[in-house]
Image 1 (cartoon, rainbow, N blue to C red):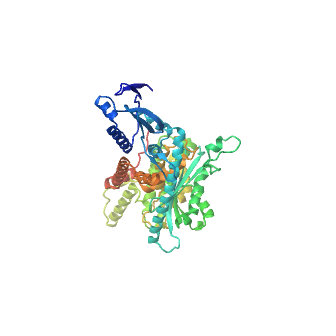
Image 2: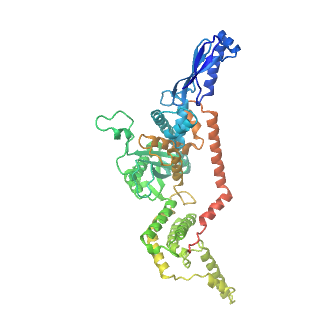
Image 3: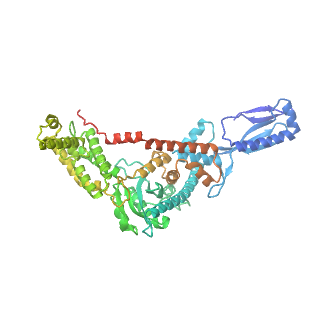
Length: 563
């Protein structure tokens, strides 16, 4: 780096490094340095004379060293040549001990919380003219923060379990060990796209239905970079994250079973009911392996039931090309069939008589193909407007016949009545759909048949778990980068768990606990703004207008494609 000559009072010179780039400086550390050089300028007569001569009394010699984003700057008195050094960041000590530069911790923390890594941090800092961390230093800090987040998440899950237990006891105190309902789901570190189930890492979570907080989280890893890259000889001492040697698809079941087995010792609870997706292997495994497995009841997620039906329709069109084309199973018709199924589940879930509601739901689901193709003779009036209108006209006709009066609008009634018969092509399609729906009718009915749950509405979903999966993608970068090689993915999952349990303003409080220092005012303000945005979104979605818009979108019928 080029240097320049700075004149002094005695006409000698001091080599000074040209100031290039930028540095991140803690204002408190800067104030301390200013106090030191100010005291020197006040006591050094040569420095005072040099100032009166119009020369620079104190000059910045350069950077003695830099450790990541922290730099050790050196300044020198131009007269007596006394040197002063100061670090641009303060030292902090985390939960596990050790000394870290605060700016380095903050940089890695921010990257982990936003899905970034070493490469984007280095590039961003380079544009700003800032020296960055080496990859080795970044990974070491990332591992340490991941350990802190796991520790904090364990404490948070323990508190969530106490909240669930208190709610369960207030509702029903008949059992020695309170029984609660949980929501379960699993995710993986890469997208499967329905054909590639070979992710190196997987995560499973159990969320309490009442609190909406995570009670258990488990991570499975099939790969450890250190073990894999050690070719022969002794494997060096390291933290090994390899804890799974079976198929990736089996990770979810194993994690959920582990969480159920630990429910009594970890929280003093029994997970008597769980809301899950269509994975058929979870419930039998829980019944077989969990000590209280015979008490466990599964509640089918309504969203996954409809999603399964949608996927079946897609497969049906691929397997039978004759179903394609105008007036058949077009994309618009498939959407209409799916929406009709969703509406049937929602409507029947609101009925109080669950036994009768299940029977009605099965009839509605079997009748969906006829309804969507225009045959409304078997439709329920509370679900189909055409059937409701026909029913009203029939009642009016009967009343008129009893009064021996001529019908007032027989032409309109005839026009609104749909013929029971359909043409051969549509008849074949509806027959094929009925075969599909009949095999799934009982599973769909399970999405509504939740008599054991103490709730007036039984249209339960795994939306809370799906919401957490969405939060997790913010931490791992949307599954675009392989973070399964050194435990990075597990640490980021723990951070997403803290975000779920502690809310949008989780950052400052977790920083204070983990790093043992007070977070900056800017950090607190950003967290407060995040909480405000979340609250505003929640209020907006709870407004009457927003609910009406969602209801219209849910019950709107997609017009059949005639092209």
